[in-house]
Image (cartoon, helix red, strand yellow):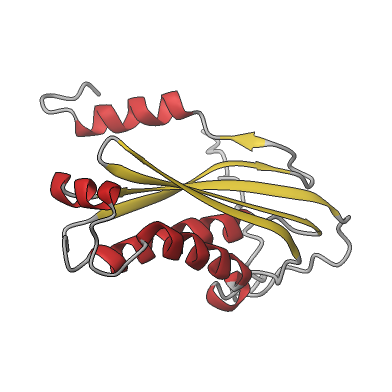
Length: 181
């Protein structure tokens, strides 16, 4: 019997010797790049009611979170070791309050040789952390998750998260009872 040889995996941030390195993007075309990330900050009902009412001990939580997210996007290459410095042309952070959670949408745009997914993800993450920081005196049990929603531009083109599939997978993972193999 001939066993199939497993496909060799190529990771762009590793050299042939397995050492981490920054990918050379110098030969890539400059194209319009865009990414959208989303964070969901979950909190107690009381905390949510206080946030909606503006009854928070540290002031305007949402304004501070928006500014923090924008600043963070601009600092991404300083925070994530192998990220390139990207000349951002636009960063927008919006926050909506819905269903007992703060929903942060962070978008980043650039005309560059590499994508802005990390900038959008860092913006959403730091905005979520700022909400936590601003409300921790009220609720230390808050938590958040972050995900890439979509990206456009570059060689790989456009990618969008299929929200329906993601929710179905999460619902199945959270559902009690027996799992079928």
